[in-house]
Image 1: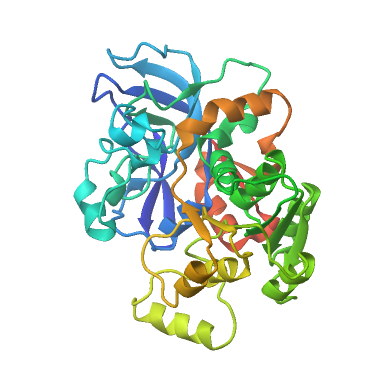
Image 2: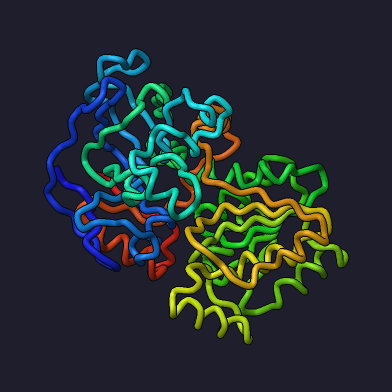
Length: 390
């Protein structure tokens, strides 16, 4: 079968690889009908996530048709149309029973690698390094889905296209969770750093959850325009001082909630702290670019909430802990517990509350995946989201 393989930093290739097989009675094999390139995939593409090996199959946003099931699977049948969540979860461990599916204790066979980096291991993830399980990803023609009795959601409404439901696999629940953990109250103002796909869904979700105002922060006009189409006010951080602008927009108080939808590859800031970050990163003493996160913390109103949905993998310096502590700011974060959100968000789509396909700007064949990565990375042709069809 054809699959998109990581071949080194800034290099992916579509290669012929063996088709997956059932390895466990709770497995299913899915023929992929649609898959997408995620901003998190760029962290692999750029070499920021360790334990990648040449030939690893990429992709954690995918859906398709069930073509084979293990003997223990009773909730899925051959021919079912399913969306598969990116975290792999057993459904029975302590975190899974509490709805914390991205923290599953049984789905990462390489938990020891993650424990060395983070203290404890989260769940395994499709196509996202050997530290997170070494699972083959979904940017392929077929994929093995472990714990298939827990993860995939059946799409029984034939009127819904793949493009309308594909993002239930990751970015729609991630953006929604980013807004939900802010405990938005009527009249609240929410600021979102990053107007990429997750940021777009965070904006839309904040409105769905009752925010009065949402402010999107980015530097690319086409991304800001898309957020504006959703109803957001916009700030281009290359044209204004973001913190001052947010104070002006909120009567000097700051937003009630600030969502970091950027993560480890944020654009560098300016001034001495920018030079400091570049120096530290140059000698690998700091692995992330924390400018957006720092700005979100110091811009948030006293007693507000900072939600971190952008992916971070290592360490940051000059972290404003004094601002957090002295101003009673709450921080909420985590890889999205996708399984918790798939059913209610599917109902939102069916009810017409949101059509997630609005973020798609480019559609390509799986064979063009390398071009898709290049366009997405370099934001060519106003590229927001690439969907690949095997």
